[in-house]
Amino acid sequence: MIRFHEMRIVDIHTHVLPEESGLALVCIGCGPMPQNADGHFFSAGLHPWDVTGNDYEDYGNLEKLLALPNVLAVGECGFDTLRGPAHELQEQAFMRQCELSERYRKPMILHVVRDFDTVIRLRKQLHPKQPWLIHGFRGGPRQMNQLYAQGILVSLGPKHNSETLKQIPSNRLFLETDGQSSINDLIRITAISREETVETINGQIICNNDSFLLQEP
Ligand SMILES: [Zn+2]
Image (cartoon, rainbow, N blue to C red; front, top):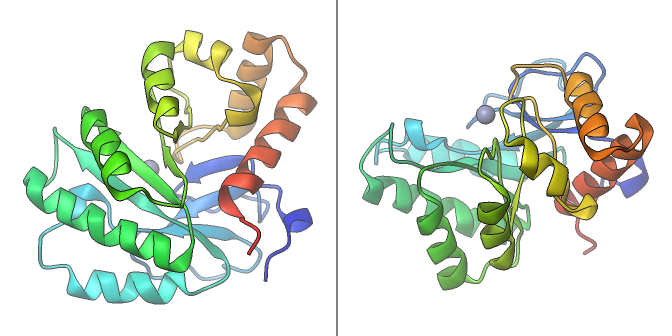
């Protein structure tokens, strides 16, 4: 069992192992688990680009991964209107992974490109207990607030709307590199934009990541 005080994740979404273990949630798709995974934390899921409708083996692997204590979230999964298979197939894959998220009691990290309406509709329809977080959010404050109103969280990466970064409430601040930048640079930019110290931002995101990823039984 992972305890709260052991967690100090700052980067909520990446695809590469951080130099220092435990500082990031590393997305590994449907596996395999990387070598020297000790001390690292992972999310596992079927990316919408990879959905074929014939993904039985992937779901089997996914279930095995989700049973592991260091796999803390389902994802990235979701919707992409610009890439990947037909919407219907993406939705089937999403529903299946939402079921797994609820069964294993692990939150979801979502990849959503130009399809927020679907995510809002499904959140209303399915009433999941687990939180959902849209990663790499580039929308403005208005769209952010529309998502919050439905109980959907967002995380900001190197490409973000600067007004959103300024306005995002402290207790909902999530940052990520998506494996493409340095989290410390992003934390510095965030601190300047919000007129806070780097230490404050660091503390806030560690705390938010904790409460997103680990729920008391
Ligand atoms: Zn990603």
